[in-house]
Every structure is written in C-alpha cells, then in structure tokens.
Length: 113
Length: 111
Image 1 (cartoon, each protein chain N blue to C red):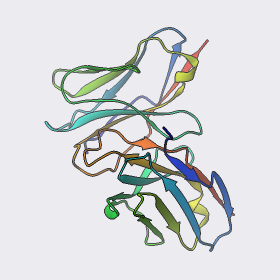
Image 2: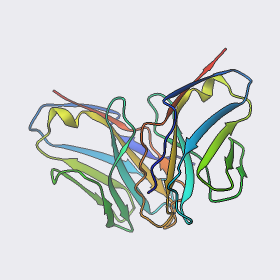
Image 3: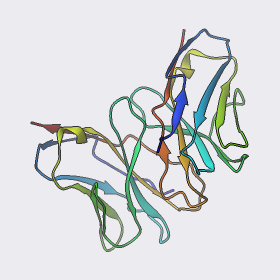
C-alpha cells in the first residue's frame, strides 16, 4: 500500500508570493494534519482536518490556511510568504478519531528567497 | 500535554541495546506516552505507545516506571539505520491530533 504522499518535494518561492502544498493520505485514512519543521527543531503543528472539517489549529498566522477534499486529500496554502516560512512541511494521516499513531509523508521542502 | 525531558544526544554501538530515557514527572493518569523517530530528511515515524504496562512490538520496547514519571525506549539490537532523532511525547489520546515534538534525542549508532 502507498504511504502518505506529498507534492512537490522541493519548492523555491520569493517573498510575498503564495504557495500551495498537497497531501494524499493513506487509503482509508480520514484525518490529515500539517506540521512545519524549521531546521534544527521538532515539527510544529499547524492544522488538523477530519472528515473535511478543521478540528485543530496551531499557533500560526492567518496567512496559513488549509482544506480537505471529499477524497480526504488536503492542501496547505500560505499567502504573503516570509523568509521565516522556509521549512520542511509535513503531512500526516491517521485512520480514525483515536490518534494512537500518525503516518507522516516525506515532506515538502519550501525555500523562500 | 505533559512536558517531557530528553537528553539532547546519545551514542550507541551497533548491535548493542539503545536505551533512550524520557522524564515526564507531570504526567496525568490518562495521558499516554508515545515515541516517534525521524531519520534525516524523512518524516517522523511512529514507533510505539503505552499507558501503564510495558509494551513491545517489532521495532522496540517501551518500559514505563510504576509511578509513570519516566519511561525508556529500548532498541534491542541497534543498527546504523536506527540513527535518528527520537521524540518522546505525552498526551491524551482524545486531545486532538496535534503532537508536540519538542527537541528529542539525537541517537548516533556507530559501527
């Protein structure tokens, strides 16, 4: 079975631009979460979606938004990019409401210049 | 979620057991202990979780002290591929999906 997939793998953007990152969960998983990992730090929670509804939001500005589609795939959007948004963006999926384990994708490396 | 404390780094010889400690002195009665690891340039990988009893799976063993204020993740026969950052996370299972990773322990397995 395929794991969590993310696209693109790498991305370079300029300050002020907008970016869309995509995630496909493991087949049958209904929950998707997004994390940001800057160099040298552990991943930081951004959003969680379950059954297409936002169920959790971390301490990130409104420039960050996300949505989940009927097929449970998800998009993370970041507007007005800042240099500090440069990071590895990770998507994780989980099979159900009890999140004993989350399965992470390989991430999208975003560089803002 | 309860706060956890882990050593920043550890070394282990290949083939030996790697014992990674985690302190969580403020853990509440219903909070679980989860372990994840992150190999360089990859997403985190779930390893194991437990509440009170010791747990074992194909990857590792989790030993939780009787007072639940600390735990140890054991990799019984470490290999070079176990070199990674290991995160100990304490949380309620129904507190949402957010995982607070902290800084973890960087484990280096040497030949």
